[in-house]
Length: 244
Image (tube, rainbow, N blue to C red; front, side, top):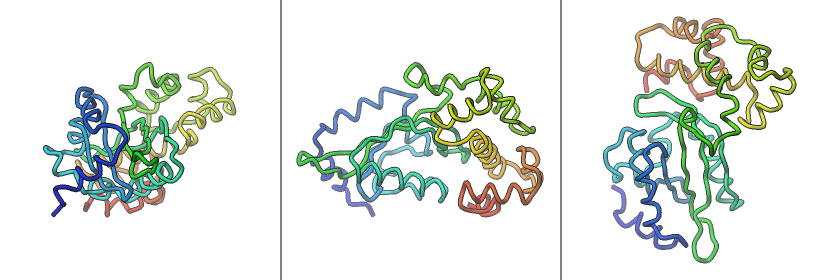
């Protein structure tokens, strides 16, 4: 059982008043969370709890990402958290995959900052994450790719060439790939593959389709092609993901 004083003791060490974090409860489209240096959650706003399918903050506190997310995503989140804590530098506007309470995975824009004590020591991180599609003026660099994302969303189960994505922005392939990677930190091909994987995740949990059927309906060439890319992205096979 989680120590009931765990959260209180940690928050008392911070330079900022814990009450300030409650402001995030008034932002329904923004998920706020905070963790200690071991990756255990110490706080989450209502939107974050809803995304995880939780009703009470008590059900979040003391748990880490492994209680809610696939192994591969946990590794990525932990790596980013530790870098922020180690360097004391924020991670700003990272585009990443985030699971929701229904088991599907969506693209989100995430920012993380270190939680500092009055002595200047980082003892955890605080972060906000927001659905990419609901991002507004603040995320204009990502919004310039709105037509590209919409095209992928509508045609991900078909063959998509980088050339056609570049043409949507009236750029050469080289210009498009360079600009895309600057904003999303991954190549257009990896982004497309990740999108197909996250759509496949939903099918694995919410349909009775075979693995091969799910592979084809989500734009993968065949069963083996799907297995390879799914394992690379999620750290497990589709069958393992389906079994939970």
